[in-house]
Length: 196
Image (cartoon, rainbow, N blue to C red; front, side, top):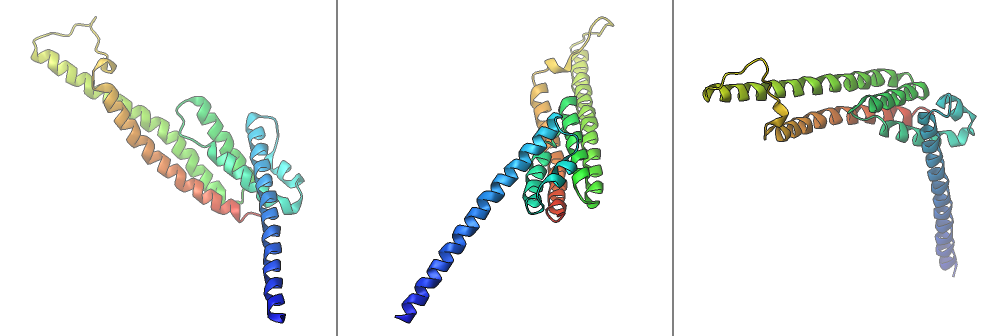
């Protein structure tokens, strides 16, 4: 009979421990979501300093809140297809630098450089494609015996293969730069996970 009780006691203890852990996970999840919301509010411009907001939180809640803040900030660092996206990415980088340890500064600087290089590289690649197709069209016209005059202009975007080539070029470029972003974001996650 003593064995049955001890086994029953062990099962009950284990069930109580699992219930306590699941309650803790629910609390942690709600704190992570709170951190995400706080970072989103900051990015919208409603808060002055994420570090101040984080420091106002109870000490035992800060780690989960920081995790949520980190997730939102990193999600907002994207390839800058326009100035608005670049501005949002740079604001997220500044916030990460503020709430993170000194080690993230170098990684954030690398991300900043990657974002700037992407825009330049994209523009260069598109110009090269334009020049290549324009040259190809000029050559075809010359083969047909047509002389280009000053009032004639060649629009490479009108070429049937232009869209396809541009899409292929952008897919490769985006893949390369997204890989670089993801590697740096992972480093930032690692540094911020050990920050508190």
